[in-house]
Amino acid sequence: MGVLQTEPAQSRPDLLAPPVAKALAVWPPEGPIDADHVLVAPIDAGLADTAAFCEAYGVSLAESANCVIVAGSRGGITKYAACIVLATTRADVNGVVRRHLDVRKASFAPMDEAVTLTGMEYGGITPIGLPVDWPILVDARVVAVPHVIIGSGVRHSKIAIAGPALGALPGAEVIEGLARPAPALA
Image 1: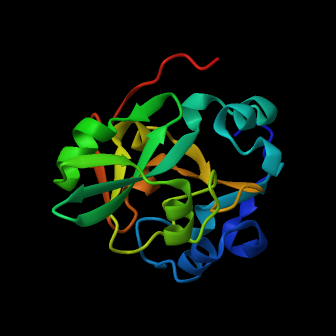
Image 2: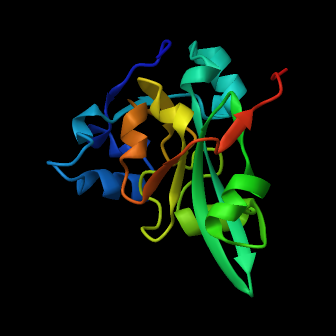
């Protein structure tokens, strides 16, 4: 986990968006994910974007995951989903995600819409604490990583969690081929 200084996330609600802190406070004690193993680390908010974060904190792109919010529509009804993909990949929004949501058109949700609906900061959105009726689509590559770094709901910290735990979140579905390899990052 690079040079991140982590501690249990439940002990640092100041480093979490309110919906994330609320979700962790009621975390099931007997569930597949032990809340004590959800760690958080403060970071420079100016370095929250994936490439800058990884370079500054010594975290590889292969152990960093992004949570993107997708909006799809059909017949005037909009559906939302969160997609969790490694930073080395990009979500297949117009293929796999669109078909999974059974919508005619799917795209990344506009920034202001994603922020308003999640209660989280853009660039820090995480699958923990999302609206309960949203599906969480997790690329199979993510659950294969022993530990992964994700957003915390705010730009001034990151969460470290076991990759398999993301596939066990309520509403999560692990999907083979949800993402495709990304072009080399400059």
